[in-house]
Length: 183
Image (tube, helix red, strand yellow):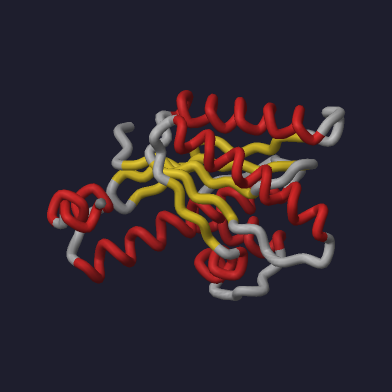
């Protein structure tokens, strides 16, 4: 099948990081892959970051990703955890930028709202709704994978709303019609 766009969704983490790839053809979506990176066994934080960079780059190349959506870190009490999470997110963004893939960040509440209609939905509710909306069944043990797919689905929904309200078919169509705004 030919896809208009292929969206890589990321739920960043340095212990477990989720990813999901969503193919979009017109108004149809297809889950191309979901999974998790288990990073806890890697010794140093830097080894984890290197592994993240390599895996994100390989996903982008393997699936010919055209857009990446990543969950923005939420505010927490543990400064060290937030720093590590921010580094993981930064490495994902750097991998996408290296491959010339545009990146969009989404707040966790926006992602959950986009998928379930409830900003404080549980991970299980998000996973269940995605299975219904996208017509797939996950055997993934980690909800980080479906969280990542939710970020990709949120991006898909967001781009459809923008395209419909502005009369554009896609971001590429918007840029073609508004080259001065792409600077």
